[in-house]
Length: 251
Image (cartoon, rainbow, N blue to C red; front, side):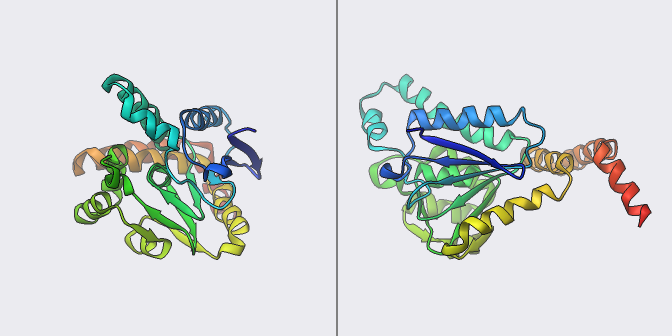
């Protein structure tokens, strides 16, 4: 059975974690399949968004038991390579041309919560639960810290990463980790409708906005404005912009 299912509907690519008997726990192979899927999607200009979701009762419960056991016996160099494998997935999500949406139901814990946090947008069912419980076993959610710190303030990030408690979708929404909450029974339809927004706006403008938003993370205000000038000028030269202006004046 394939550990990752891929389907495309209405220019939206759905990547479904398909280890329901393991609560979609991440292992080396599943992470690799996600990376391959993202790499392949980069060469498809008609795609407008990617949705990552989970089969069965949960989105993703974190690393699987075999992966956790491997950590304890691996050398430092082996653990660096293993950590890099997941870090590369997070970077590929951020560098993807199209928006990547995590559609979370059930549990999103540890690496699963990290995977959701790494996505550009997060939607969730009302019953979904999140958490970074790594500290409970002496582990550190280290790569996701770089992402979480850009999403939240310092003190809230510290609390979530060092206390390891679970929190609800409503709490995640209140602090800005979840964009929208939907009813459980309507989640599949709501996910498709939410993602379909990107079929109705300019794909090139969204791609450029995504790149600009993340590129200004580590630069000064003046440099961010300067980068904005360049992006603005490039956007004006795109076919989407020219056609959009023409439609505006036709009205």
